[in-house]
Length: 449
Image (tube, rainbow, N blue to C red; front, side, top):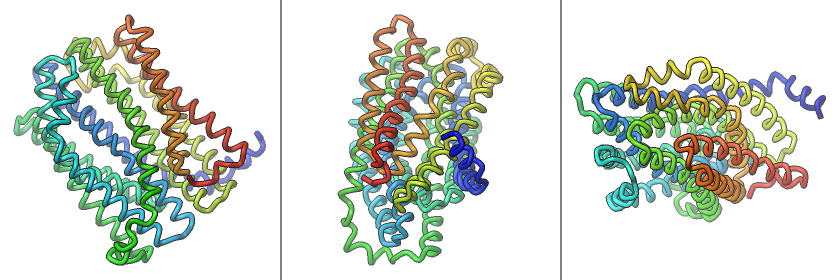
């Protein structure tokens, strides 16, 4: 086994394949937590902690809403990659069309019902009235980016599925740099405070949509895919598989967001300084997530193509090569937080009480990259193989472990929250690893489901 591992890792072409897919996504994904850091830094330098707490609460709620619909990207990536592996232009085109139709239907429903959704979400928050006020303000503006944000999920997933990482890189970087520039302009220059941060995100999402459609058109012409109008009569063909996959990943995302929402709400109940400190540290966690997701995206594209081609050897090479570089990335992030974590906190906020709180809980973030890397990589494996049911079941178990741990050690306060989060990320990886090993040994993994 060791000799086989050494033989696979000695192949230069494999490393090139992984890095060509992963590095653009790592670079682009790092701009996402960078955007979060800029949001926190711009708002964190205003006079009161409740501005930062309000942005944290409002952005968490919109993230929950959008991330619950993030199955659009994951399902599209897996299905498109498998169509690419099968070399089926008809299926590849249908995946894009079906994904866009589902995205815009869901966006319309979200806009129609966003007011009662917001009332329900904020009614269960224990945050102060000031934090809830600014959180509601952020949510009510940001929700209008839904048509663009959900369509961008599909576009991003489809481009990744075609083994194209550069176009998604440009899409994500342009969107987030636009957001950062508008953030600074609206908040610091125009003094729009929380509303400025929200409008910056809305305009950035629509900018990303225009660029994304351009990339889709260019890829469509390059691969000579069928005319969109010719696909409409058969638009429902294969839709059942996409909807089943979407529903499984939706339930998986629901469990994930229940954990992250609980972190924000429970932190808010511990006081404005704690929820603000947790917002700072969650920016660090997002840095881990989006950095590791770059390799997870590469895994999705490579695994999906291998499954579409029904090649067990190709799949094995993808797993080993991507895991190798994912481990290196996690070690770099661990060293970054260990050596510069305190400095990063002070870059984000100059409020002494928030700094002290964030310093206290920083050790949990230092161990996070090594513990959590496996769940990101294994997520990529299961997305590429379109095994949504397995992802749903393992996430449910990890979520139950999170809540069991927190309520068992709730007397530890915010330490209990962060301990439970670290264990939650670890359990996600363990659950998927057990399922993968079982199916691999039974020679059942290279079968799309």
